[in-house]
Image 1 (cartoon, rainbow, N blue to C red):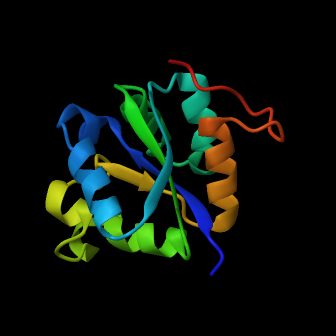
Image 2 (image 1 turned 90 degrees about the vertical axis):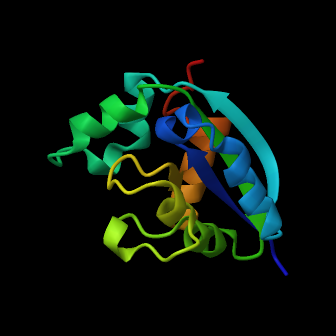
Length: 145
């Protein structure tokens, strides 16, 4: 079966609360492979590029402030159907829609500070992985440590 790559990022609240190890354990216990990992702190310019699709929405400034408030841990995850499997494991964005046993249901009750980010589609995964881990095909910016 063909392997798929996706990005899973532990957000500043997850790093601050020392949840990185637990999240990695859950991903590995599902049988997903972590093929790359990087801890870094987003600056404002990088966060604006990474979350460009949210630009113009009323929560954009708060999102930027939150995502630049501390380090994140980015994981490149591989497996057949990695995008769907990771998104199922993390759970819904909205607290009231989160199923028990998902990362967000177990570790967050808030809408915005919800511990993790995961790519939503193959296009998003390719773009986000290139931004975070580098790719000669993109010139959208660099990660600042």
